[in-house]
Image (tube, rainbow, N blue to C red; front, side):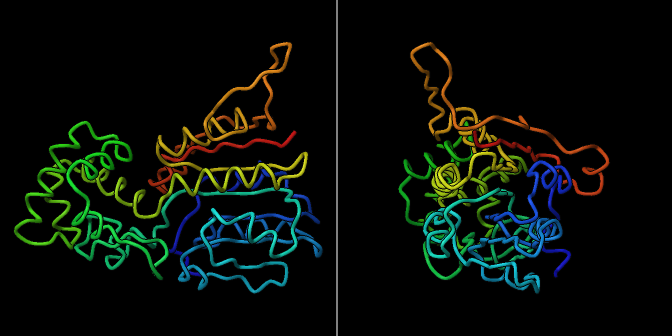
Length: 294
């Protein structure tokens, strides 16, 4: 296993919150460096089963040698399809760590970070699809501003979009260094510009909604779902979903006014302890939410 690929946040709290059954069937829909998967396997018995999803084939280098484990090279939005393929009708638990792996942020060639100059790629699955460069160079000003405003929550999204469009008329914006310069000198703004484009490239929020709906249908009564979020957009979706049972956050009530939801919320957004964030600063923005299927 590549130890620097990713350090999972709140590992112990997440695994304990899943209440793993030795003979249970589980899904880790964000395999990454394999930290969570290995911790789940450590608690499974001989009849236990774990399916780990990752759309980046590079994650397979972290594969454990374990007959109870199955790697699924796919976006987690296809959770239901692959569980059908493997004959899994119910899950005892599901884990999703929505943070981008260190491996992606620390690799210049992937284009996820402005800390290194590299190609504007940002695709989690490098086998196809549009890149961040495609979006930056081909979206019109209005659509660029929309992406930056909605996914980056940037109030000056129009001004940044205007600078990008003006710059690309002279030469294509193909490198992370170019984009960072156009975003301005504020590192927080640069971070949000890169976040917005990454979400658009990978349709992260659309995929998240589809995965959550599949998880709701696949979890057996008493099964648990644990999700680690890292920014307000995804956290809002997960929070509303676990509270209401639907990705719109629509609260449904019965004739007597009782809230109808398929979940009992166990963890409402726990943050990492100071001791952990000192060792792993990226855990600072993590929030852990856990719910049990009723």
